[in-house]
Length: 245
Picture 1: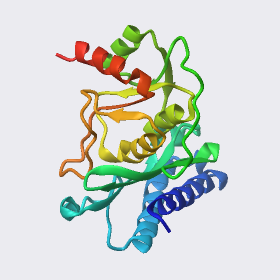
Picture 2: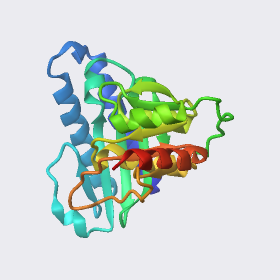
Picture 3: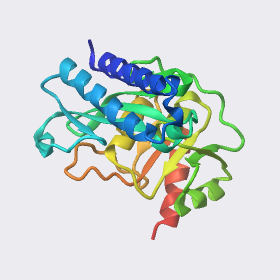
Picture 4: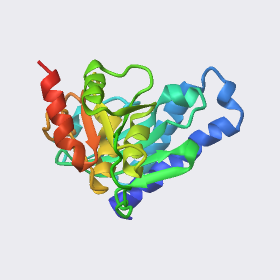
């Protein structure tokens, strides 16, 4: 199997596990979110270690083995991105399976289990609709950052609140939105797989100062992110620069 096929397969199997937790009636279980994180993580680690035994894994739900820092190939995964949305039985939660090689997010898959969708870096490039008169910007449904709000006002963008980072990024990949701008804190597992898929689809992806997104750092904090249609990148980065002191 290619790396992209591995990523897709692992994402699909984790998605099925999480859907089954709900189908079994556990959605009313107050322990659902903990079980979802733990069981999806265990499955993903087992599958990746079986498929790529020489690779390292950085997971939100596992102890960080810092020996990964010297490795070329590191899978960076979020077994359940949008745990709150999962617990609320919404659709905007995801599974992230990303692979960084020498710090570059080259391969990945993002599953949206509730919607029975998976997006991967070996998908055909999407054909997007013409740019709308007013861009749509996906933002946090609970805590949109002041920088994001300012940029939206500057561009006259329509705000589209949504949960998981993966769901937001895939909304841009699908053409349901044009911009995903995040500030205020994320980690590598929140965006490695979404960024890999977005780049493969032909989107712009960077830090909000325009610098590249680098993965497998000793500190996995990666606090800001821009994924957008290439036509909007310059305008968004300019608006951010005018906001940040």
